[in-house]
Length: 303
Image 1 (tube, one colour):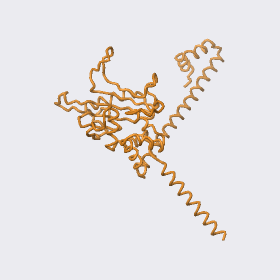
Image 2: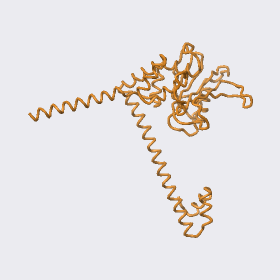
Image 3: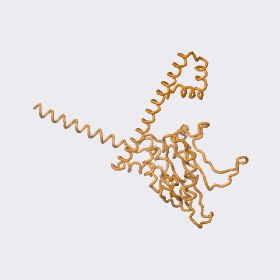
Image 4: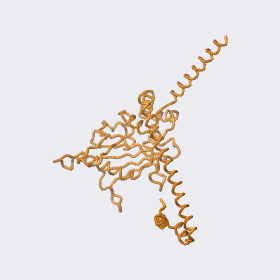
């Protein structure tokens, strides 16, 4: 009797575990700020059309066709640096757009953008080609960190212009910077690219479901995320990428903490030696002058 009850209890426990896991799986959905998910999402032509239309401020019907191009830009010489884009799109009129989803702050991001844009321009020309073959190239930075700390504008468009008059010199190169961390409180009347930024910045299925009600293109994006999330192989890639990102963040945090502790130990050692030698003026100057502090550390062999 006891044995049968135990087995029955085990079966119920096992059933609850499976049901609990299924409920968790139903809630799971990939988030666009993970670069793997964003790249997969942009494979959908209808989603691309909706995003590009919002970015350029035109109706989706005006975006006739978009084609995904190789994301590795060619090298002209053997020792040239490769350019590897997240999503590289070409429109029917020849305009090329590079979309980059970046969550972690990146040193020299503005220089990276200019490098990629320049590669996109030069890749259009081959030996003997005239400059009239060059088509407009656009870079889109979707950033989950603050790139322009001086204001609260979440979206900006940058191009080459006269610094005195503001007159556009050429629109052959354009840069769009979307800072997700600066999104203002939601406004029911907002539209265009800010609405898409809110979609990219969603934190869970419920938020994405609400955004999907905005228009057919966001609904398509939500349905695509749902399909991707149900694909076990895609989910494994997504979670692997997410784990890599978390591990990298943890490593940076650890290295920063250790670096600070080592720096503190070095400064304390310097102060101790200066006190023991009665070099109070040097101690005072070392506190105020970092370069002089480094010079003293070198003198005492502290590293």
